[in-house]
Image (cartoon, rainbow, N blue to C red):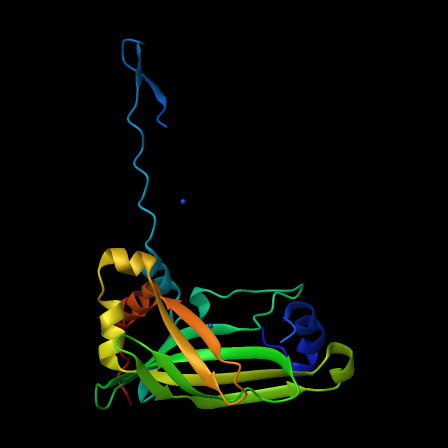
Length: 219
């Protein structure tokens, strides 16, 4: 469900601070009782499998690119309405004409302020890399500015992740995929930088979803 910005104001004002799973008994033919073997418990899905299973795919004969997203893999919801004031997830684009793949991090920032944060650069990776960010959408609502101490502002930005960096994370060892996170920082024009992180499992899950999907032929 999507909410308009003016519907978010009151809820965000409440949640934003002031400033990304036995065996049984069997009776034998002679009437003697014996312990049955405990039924095997299916292995719990890995975190990467979770992200692969929850990945969304947009693709049909009228699309030149198949679009993959991990947006539904995890969202931290806050407040009475279960809103997602801040979020970060992965997107990938498979160009069906050239076969080229692109990877992005999508970030939603929500905050109270009289000025825009305006992220302009993302820092990430080992060795450290810097990539310009791109603004996707900006929304603001200032009708309760005096009551809540600033305008409610929401910024959606993306930045590209080089394929080599994506594969470095997605193809890491199983131990690393289960335990590690990939950190990034958004540099902002107002100086209030944003620190985010994504689990390695999210990269591995997206890679699995892409490998399992056969792009639909274009018309």
